Each structure stands twice: as structure tokens, then as C-alpha cells.
Amino acid sequence: MKNSNEQIAIRVSVNTIVVNVILSGFKLFAGIAACSSAMISDSVHSLSDVLSTIIVMVGVKLANKKPDKEHPYGHERFECVAAIILAVILFATGAGIGWAGIEKVLAGNYGELAVPGLLALVAAVISIVVKEGMYWYTRAAAVEIDSSVLMADAWHHRSDALSSIGSFAGILGARLGFPVLDPAAGFVICLFILKAAFDIFRDAVGKMTDKAADEKIETKMRDSILSQKSVIGIDLLKTRLFGDRIYVDVEISVDGTKTLKEAHDTAQHVHDTIETEFPKVKHCTVHINPAVYE
Image 1: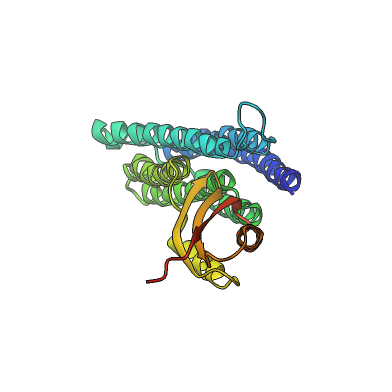
Image 2: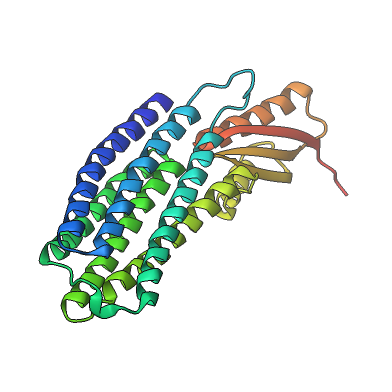
């Protein structure tokens, strides 16, 4: 299953790299030929997607390695490391684009700013369509294999689509007689990129710091455990995220007069049920307490 997920992620990543190289080259050409700083900034953003996708491929490859002596619990958190690196690259890209736009706006020589050509406007429309398509393509694969780093890459594509919308608005405004809107669009683009970087970073850090699983998942786990025969109550239920997987620690109460084998069978059944009903659970530890009657 892991190898299959890895193959899906690698295939999607290779396809997006090819499309991004072609698209960024076209947008760079259009930006230079049509004298559009917004389109040149947009092409740089698309080119950064190539680097981010390579990071995704490396992260997925490492995360799917089997446990070893140095990492007996597996390597799933390498996906989070890759997502954090991706967020930092995305942040740096956004900051650079935003700074370039601010410098041109503050320069004040609006009359000297070149009016972008029609080619830049066409390139912006093509970029919006292609990048939005890449977002849905990558997102579908991320949902299928439940990969946070692939989902982060999908949002990178979405941020590029949003930046292209900003480019389109800036280029159109400049062609309508407001040349300052072209570099100003670069600043607006950077805000979208920084927001995406922050969201990716926050999600990855949460998964690396033993954050609890979603409350709805824990509620479903409680209901599933309490539905098991011989389980009288739940004394403790703790979950923690390990990359995209979940570790579960549960203490259940059973009749104290049960034999050791009967108590063990109950714990084993709870363990198997949790790991079967919740595919994201990497391991479930069950502790038995004798029920206290008052």
C-alpha cells in the first residue's frame, strides 16, 4: 500500500514538474516581451513550484521508508519536514515578489512605467486555467493517499493561480491607463503566497509536536470502543499525530473477575477494531483496568 501511495505521489509530482517548467518558461517570455513586471514575478512563482515539487518527491520517498534501528517508529514525519521546507520557500518567494512590487510603487515614477502588452494578459489567463487545473489534480491525489506534503504542493499551485489572477488584474489596469497597478499586483500576489505558506507551516508543525487528533475522530473512537463487548468504560483516551498517522493510547475498564486471558482478548479486540476502523491509526496501545463499583 505504501509503495502504491509513493508511486502515485511520484507520478503526480513528475507530471506537475513538466507542466510547471513549460508554463514558467512561457510566462517569463511573455513578461519580458510584453514588459510586465507582474508576469515576470508570476513566472518566478511558477518556477519555485518546480523546486517545491522536487522537495515533495524527496519527502514522500523518505516518509515511506521502512522502520530501521535509528527510526524504529517509522519515517512519516519526513513528510512534515518537507512541508516545512516548502513553506519556507513559499514564504521567501512571496516576500521577494512583494518587496519588488513595493519598490516600484514607492519609486513614484509612474509615467516611466511601461504599459504591458497584450501577450502578458493572455499569459495570465492561460496560467490561471492551467494552475487551477494542477491544484485539483494534485489535491485529488493528496486526498487519495492522505498526504499532507502533496496537499501542501496542491495549495502551492492554488497560490500560483491566485497570483495569476492578481497579475491579470494588474496588467489589465495598466493597459487601461493605470501602469502603477502592474507592480502593485505583485504586492497583492505576495499576500496570497504568504498566507498559503503560513497555513502549510502551521499544519506541519502541529503534526510534529504530538498534536491531538481531531475531536470528531476521538469521539468516533470512544463510541467504537464502548460498543465492544466486555468494555465497561473508558478511563483514558489519548491521541497524537505522527506525520499523517495517529498513535492511540487507551485505558479501558473491564470486569475485575475476568481471567487474564479474557481481559487480554478484550484488549486485543479493541486494538484490532481501532486499527481496522481508522486506517490513519499507526498503532493503538490498550491498557486494562479492573472496573470499580461503588
